[in-house]
Length: 84
Image 1 (cartoon, helix red, strand yellow):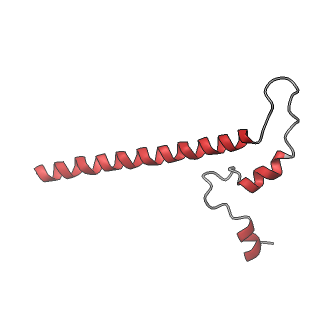
Image 2: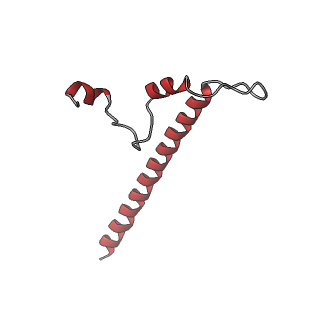
Image 3: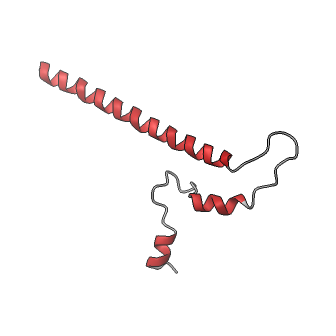
């Protein structure tokens, strides 16, 4: 049953997609990941943090690029209006 307590606990705000996972969910999932292979580079939890950080950086880049496009569009429209 959804109550105000459970709604707050399972709130998905701030996530881009419904399938995105919070840091707390990643901590739970880490125990379910298969064991690292004895060959090759040792696995660390830094891999997960790096991918999360790269995803956040990418989203910030997209947002800033979108902002610059909007600013350029506003400048272009204002110049056209000024000429009219």
